[in-house]
Length: 590
Image (tube, rainbow, N blue to C red; front, side, top):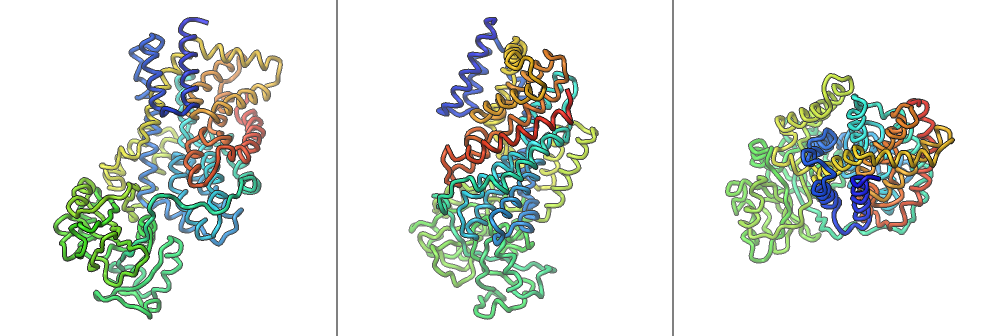
């Protein structure tokens, strides 16, 4: 081995060791390794930061922003509200949620797909009275599986397509991964829904979280020309239950009605009195196209709809608002802020929310301009709760968001426009149409992943340039010497899966893809089956909670232990190998 090869292998070994140790975050580890590589001369200075402008890095960042826009527009509510039902059996629920998660993760980042479906799954488990641990791991695995089917579904596919472009002059297209990745995903989903969930230890219901999850008393108004005018309040109960919202009263002409409100016929301007969590309240409002509880709130939304946020604050005894009402304090006209709801530790609130006198200890749900949330909190003399990333869903733009994204995917799929450009145009369109506030634009990019990619890509290129990947490929070829093609692909898949189970799947793809290409060159066959093998294997990280971020996300909420994942993950990985290798040889022959 040359000196450069020894240094690079040592750097990669150090990176892998540090990632396994977990003492320092992966982006710091990767960036430090890049800088050391530059200082030691194994990474050219001119190429040091080329990874940050690499198409793979750009696409990952843009996909995260587009995913956030789809969530914010209410597009996901159209799916989950229609299909998810807490009365379904456990197996049917896992199959349905897994199918939804897989489809979503095929067209948006699989981490984002899990993040938006996880609250739905937790809510459904709570309604059904079962342990959320029985469903969160299957949902995590399903979103990982779905990402295998398209170019943008998971970062490893994006990386491998980019490496193919650099090596062969042409990248994989949007749906080139579908034949192999789709078969793997379908087989995996069938296993998870029919057998896999039965292998998960059932430790009983989990406590929801140490996070404050306050139930608010809030009001939503029937707008003019609403489709709900003329309906009875009781006809709203089913929709309310789906959103986990309780309708507890009706306000008409400024007066609260009790007793007969369930049978009252809704009129323009009526306000429903609700008990709900912030996310559920916003989902219910978006799904039924309801207004906030007074005209001032609607004017505020129209005037500053691209710069609003929802915050939660606690009113201490000496707060300005304690002992006063939001209306009496002039909260709306003084601070351009509206009181959406009040949480009072289960005690009844009998007045309109804006006319309710705030008591010490009340938790207030406020809608305010984004750049003034800290000032509003200070002016009120309140204490902010932990940030929960609450947003106001732009429910009237769901189909616009879907249409823009679908047009970009179609254009990129047929080769009319380069995928990063298409996704970039979607992001610009989301900002211009106020689906995504420009103030939120960069908050949804997972910068540690961007730094990881930007740092590892130059290191991977240096390893390939130095001949390091050729050494690894030769070692694997010698190991499989004389074996048939399916056995060679199986060994590559097992090695890549093993790396992905203990390392970041993105880093695994950067290292393993050039190895696969070099193996193909040595054997004088097409590199495509080797790249497809790496693509599936890098994503198939099911044995540990650290191999894929989705597995990490469900670790705490599901109440899992480190050793729980292999119970379902090991047979799933074996199944993936069994169905993927023959599929590759059929659709991507040597």
